[in-house]
Length: 387
Image 1 (tube, rainbow, N blue to C red):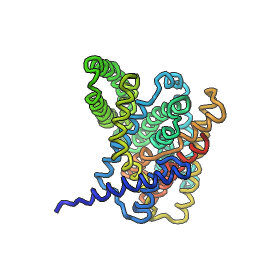
Image 2 (cartoon, rainbow, N blue to C red):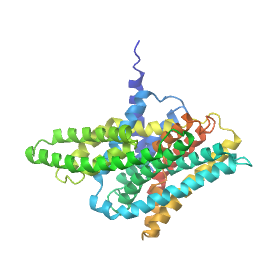
Image 3 (tube, rainbow, N blue to C red):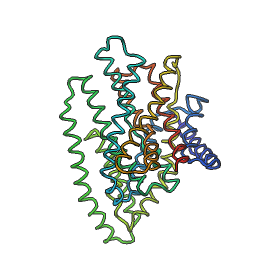
Image 4 (spheres, rainbow, N blue to C red):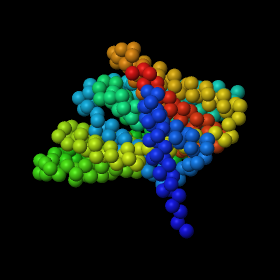
């Protein structure tokens, strides 16, 4: 008999994320904090009232895709161009420092006196996990505070996109070393072709939307549907054809359409209704539900705490240093560093790939999940306190 339990699960998530979100606002915290706590409290790690299913995972994936699409639409293109060089420097140093920190932490705890090839691979993979940045959490917090548009928001978004590409390259290198059959040169070629693909789409799709805008000045509804379809196609193509995270494709889709000044706000509003009414709450609750701490013993707990501290400080130091090198003030540099702390679903996906490849043991995976969830939870809180 077909199960309809998913209906109850969705109802609980939608209602509880709203209630927890309102409570978060009461204590001057972004609503996203409450939505994340729903997954932690009601998920397997605590009350076990909610279980992650394929449906919830897929709905949550659409939620983060739409969230990043909105972030692209909300991006002031002139501000992003100004932050282009700075974003690259911030992302580059913000990848190198966490990678070295994560690698060193693993070797310190689990490296043998004579470090083997596999030890280095596992250590490097922990470093790769820490390079990830899940900017979707920061985007939501910045949006609520009205700080998404401007120098800080553009820097964080731009750096996060570049960070994602650099992280995927690092992941590819580690996986390539672990699996000699993988061609590193072919992966770099796919990344290059992805940017060519984005450029071609940007040239033609923007003009197509301009045409529809002129031809049907009152047909905004259909343009909103076209925009959402374009977002999903870009996310699919990025992930399937180029090996780039789907959220990166969604962000570039929004970026391509962000200069449609006459209809941009309408598209954002319509996509926002779909996103915030259903998909985004499921995504945030799903992140919290991944906190399952079975198998955590003393050494692993100590390792996870140290790794957590390294994860937080390495992004703040790396991205903050990159910001300072680009002439940002101390407050701006600290804000950018904090905005890049969250690891979220990006790091979880990377960790899952490592687990499947045997580079992360099943006992260590909960420690990685703990680090990911805690950094995700504290990022909006720290942003609120800082800004």
